[in-house]
Image (cartoon, rainbow, N blue to C red; front, side):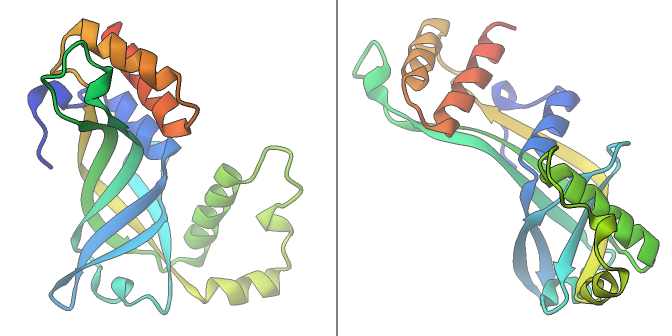
Length: 203
């Protein structure tokens, strides 16, 4: 990924937080000699060393992905930045965003207990705290049948790149103007980008 030095995320904690908060990722690999992508949730383990996920078995991507170096992209918040918000009209539009790219090697999960464990962690992450749904309460025979329809995998993380394009190449005054305008927009992306910008500006 092209990352100018002033946009580079050097804080590992921030990168891990993006991976956890925006865990519905895009996974790229080579399939039959061509780029192939699947959109799916990827769960970071507690040691921050592996990403866990699973393919639907009819998805051909998993069939030749073993031992490939793959790229997983975690798309953080993003939004349009209008030059009308600046103190001058000598400017052009841009886009602010936060993203994390993870490179690693894929291992297919063949062990049933490891697959169950990864699925359990996924359900725990996404179900609301007061949800009545618990994976361990599902009929074992039914669950075993459903598990046959997925191929679990894990990605051994080799490299993490983070980019936070938050108008750092503009003056503090202009960054504050952008933050003020973003805070007036009710959309979630604009609110989150303004929060990231404020945190970066106050470092």
